Structure formats: C-alpha cells, structure tokens
Length: 524
Ligand SMILES: CC(=O)SCCNC(=O)CCNC(=O)[C@H](O)C(C)(C)COP(=O)(O)OP(=O)(O)OC[C@H]1O[C@@H](n2cnc3c(N)ncnc32)[C@H](O)[C@@H]1OP(=O)(O)O
Ligand SMILES: CC(C)C(=O)C(=O)O
Ligand SMILES: [Mg+2]
Image (cartoon, rainbow, N blue to C red; front, side, top):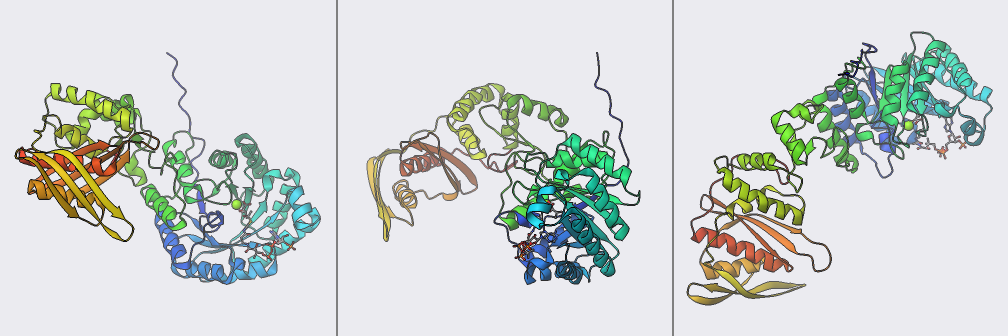
C-alpha cells in the first residue's frame, strides 16, 4: 500500500508573532475600544505570549495616543509599537506614545503600488522613496527598533519594492513588512515574493507579512510568506480587522503547532491562552465569533454525527487533530441530534447518571430520541432527561381540561385552570408576573403541590405562524429533580402540560436525584 510521504520540517526557525488586534483589529467597522478595554486586552496578549503588540495609531486622536502610552507604561514583555504615516507629526506622536515602553518600536509606512502612489498620495515613486527614507531616519532618532511597511506591497512592482526596502534598511529599518493590504495575493505568489526579497535584502533584516482576508486566504498567504522567508507574521485574534479582517492569530499558531512535522516553525505563544483571548476580544469588540470558526468557534471541537461520535468515544484522535485543552477549551463535546447514533446516546445517558439502564430500555428510548430529534433538531440535556423520565408511563392523576388567561399591558396576568382529578374536575384561579407563572400557580392550588421551578426553556419545534412550541421544565421537589415536556401550539398550554406532568410524577413517586455528569445545554 502506498503511504503518504512523511513531511520533513522545512525549518526550525522561531516566528515572531506581531499582534495588531488593537490597531488593525480596531479598524473593524463598528469597533471602538476605550483605554481600559485596550489595556485589558494588552495584558491578555502579553499572557498569550505575543512578541509585538501594535497598540494603536497615535496620531489618530489624543485618545489613541493616550491608549498606546498607557499600554507602553503598564504592559511588560512584548515590544510595544504604534503606527505612523511617513510624516513628521505622525512619527513624533508615535515616539511620544511608546517612549515609556520597555521595548519600544515605531512602525512607519507608505504605499508603493502604482494606484496608491498616483491616486491616493499623488506622489512620484522617487518622492515616495524619499519620504520613506526620511520617515525611517526620523523614527530611528527616537528608537532603535523601526519597522517599515510598503502599503499595498502585493500590487507593487517587485523591483520598486526591492529599491524602497534597500533604501529604508540603509536608513535604519530593522523589520521590513510586506502587506497584502487588500487581500489580493495568493500563497504561491506570496512564497515567491518573500523568496525574492530575502535574496535581495541583507540577512539581518526581519521580513514580515501582513495579510488581509478579502479572498479568504490571509492565513494561507501568511504561512506561504513564512515558507518564502518571513520571520514575523502580523495577525489579529479572531482575524478581526479592516473589511474581511486580518490573518487569524490562533489559526496560524495552531497550524504551526499541529503541523510542526511539516513546517518546523516555533512561536512563543502559550496556546492554552488562545480561547480566553478569543472570548475577551469577542466580548470587548462586540464581534461574535462564527460557530464554525477554526480553533475558537463554538463548533470547532463539537461532533454531531453518529459515526464521528462513535469514533471520538473510542479514540479522540479519530476525528480530532488537536486537543481542545491545548487551546484552553474544555474537552470535545458531542452534540446530540438526529445524526447521533447509539454509542453517543448511550454515553449521554451515562453522563446524566443512567449508566445502569438495561440495553433493551436504551434501545427503546433510542427510537423515541430519533423521533424527537427529527422534530426539533438539537437535543438538550433536559430533553434527554424528560425522555428518560417518560420511559415508564406516568399515571395521569391530573390532566388538563381547560384554561383561560387574561393578560395585557399594565395589568396583572390572571389564569383560570380546570384539571381533571381523582375527585372530579376542579377549577382554580391565580395571578402571576406572567401568564405562565399564573397558570403554574393555579395548577399548584388544585394539586396542593408546589415544586420549585429550576429551569424553563421554550423552543419552536415547527415553523410558521402555527408553530408548535415545546416547553421543557425542570423542577425540584424536596431532593428530587423532575423534568417535564409539553408540546402545543399555545405556549401557555405547553407550559401547563409540562408542569402537570411534573406534578403527576411527584404523586407517582418518580424522578430521582440525577445531577451527576451534568452537561451544558446542547453539549455533552
Ligand atoms: C492600510 C492601513 O490600514 S493604513 C491605517 C489606516 N488607519 C487609519 O486611517 C485610522 C486612523 N486614521 C485617522 O484618524 C485619520 O485618517 C488620520 C488622523 C490618520 C489622518 O486624518 P486627515 O489628516 O483628516 O487625513 P485623511 O484621513 O482624510 O486622509 C489621509 C491623508 O494621509 C495621506 N497619507 C495616507 N497614507 C500616508 C502615508 N503612509 N504617509 C503619508 N501620508 C499618507 C493621504 O494621502 C491623505 O493626504 P491628503 O489629505 O494630503 O490627501
Ligand atoms: C499599515 C499597514 C501595515 C496595513 O495595515 C496594511 O497595509 O494593511
Ligand atoms: Mg492592514
């Protein structure tokens, strides 16, 4: 049998991780971080182990300058840099902002593509080179560590890039950044461009990539840049940034980590801080992470289908190339739904405390689980408990005969409920903060029981105006935890049915203390 050839690591080099979440990331439409949020993020980036924090664009506003200054004063470990156009005021502002840093850097840039030079800057190429050299020279008068970027480099003439980079290195730039400003390049092109620049520039210069995701290739292009010779990669947490965003830090780092056999690169990132960093950025930026986002998305370590779940239960590595704990997340989750199989169903029951359930019972319940999953998609822990609790028929001591709710704006909801009981039909009326609470109160009056509500969840199980609502209720009666499901087109009726079911279980002495192995809704 032919085996895939084992890759040989291409390099053992250390890649410098330059985080620009606080500068390019903040250029995401709608994102504006205040000083304390920026500082909180910068401290987390330091814990994460990034090498460089681009903390802002100091000339942009007095607030941005102060934000960068605070980070420079208070965050130790990474290099702190601020962005500056190729102009005196920008560079002086950046110099002021980073002066208190333990390791300060000034990052200056100017565009080099024909369209940017002609249409945006209105400058001839010679003048652009002159401005770039002046900017780097001025920056070097403040700090030893100066980065120069050729904006829109990937749409620039390669010989012109070589010329401006040589001139800026001569003027004192120590890092040369080659941005794919508009996300236009391809991995192959990027690899060749970096190989070309590496051959053109002195060996001590650190080549850097800065990729945008307009064509969804920012991570691939960054990795290709490394293959061509880049030793610094600019990226952001969750890939946030201008337009479609920047290359995602967590994806690049985990690609290097997981495929160390192939790339051989190392980084200083503490991978166990990745998930925490992602959650923090999402919370403070207000930008949710898409569920299927690699590494940090909700589904990145979730298994939905029976064959995969069975494989993961037998050996995690069958369907996982990374360990969730390695990126700071909880272990893999099995999501129960219509694609789940018996192995996952059995495991879910075991996790909920039903390890001793005989096989024939599990088999019977599995059929009912599939029916339920067909109707409602994802199955939550409460649904499973309700399914288990309904395995033996609950005696119908009480059943719903009818109800009426009066509710409206600025009035207290009142419920009238009629139950069939062993003593014949009984009516009761109660009020509550909402119609469901009023209905529960009326039912309690009739049954004489008052279990404590622990959780209440409602979900539409069909679509359209006449959708069925499914109410799942958990309640505690003494030490016993009980679960009831009710389905109806009217949500109050579905709620009442679930509540009556719980009361019938109490009367029948059913339910159990089954907290062991509790899992989050929808996740096992
Ligand atoms: C690819 C990138 O991500 S670059 C970074 C982008 N980030 C930002 O722009 C965020 C912060 N920006 C700002 O707050 C403002 O744009 C400022 C403060 C920088 C400038 O504001 P203004 O002075 O009002 O200028 P405005 O933004 O309208 O236009 C930019 C000017 O800078 C010039 N410029 C653009 N890039 C550079 C550069 N690298 N070096 C020198 N000049 C430049 C433009 O040609 C234009 O000049 P002009 O006014 O003479 O035509
Ligand atoms: C300023 C530079 C580095 C940039 O953000 C870009 O070109 O995308
Ligand atoms: Mg950018």
